[in-house]
Amino acid sequence: MEHKTECKLSENEILWEKETVQFSPEDGDLHQTGYAAQKTISTNDPRVTKIAVTAFSVGFGLIGMIAMAFHWWGFGILFLGLAVYFFFSQMRKINEIAKEMKQKNRDVTIDSKEELHEIVSEVHGEMKAAYKESAAFVFTEKNMREMTRKTLPIYVVIGAVASAALGLAVHPALGILTALVFTVFGVLYYGILMKILVKSGKK
Image (cartoon, rainbow, N blue to C red):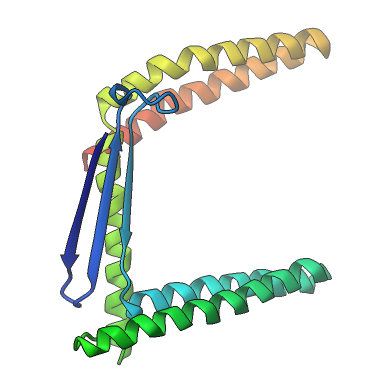
C-alpha cells in the first residue's frame, strides 16, 4: 500500500489537500484481491464548502418536497428536517472557520458571478483530475488482465449454474436464454468495457 498526502494552493488561493492511497494484491489484505486507488481532495475554504453545503441541502429539500407531493408525509418531513438541520449546523461551523481565516487576511467570500464560475470550474477540474489519476493506476492492461484471470472463472460458473438451475426447474428454453444473456453480457464486459477502461487509464 502506498500513501501520499500533498497540499496545493490554487490560483484562486484555495488550499487543497490531496490524499492518495494505492492498493495492490501484494499488500496482503484479505479483503483486497486486486488493484485500487483512493483519491480524496478536501478544503476548508468557505467559498467552496458553502457551495457544497447549499447544494446538499437543496438536494435533501427537493427529495422531501417530491415525497410530500406524493403524500409520503413522514418521508418528506424527514428529508426537509435533515436539509434544514444540515444547512444551519454546517454553516455555523463554516462561519467559525471563515472568521479565523479573515484574521489571516484570507479571502472567504465570493464577490461576483465570475468568481463563482471560476471556483465551480476549479472544483470540477480537481475532481476530474483526481478520477484520472486513480484511473491511470487501476485501469492498466496488466491490472485488467489480472482481474479478468480471477473473476472470469467465477462468472462462468455462476452463469452455468444459473442457466442449468432455471433450465431444469422451469423450462429448458429459459435455461438457454439465461446462458445467452450471460454470454452476451460477458462478451460486452470482458471484451469491450475492459478495453475502454484501459484506454481511459492511459489518458
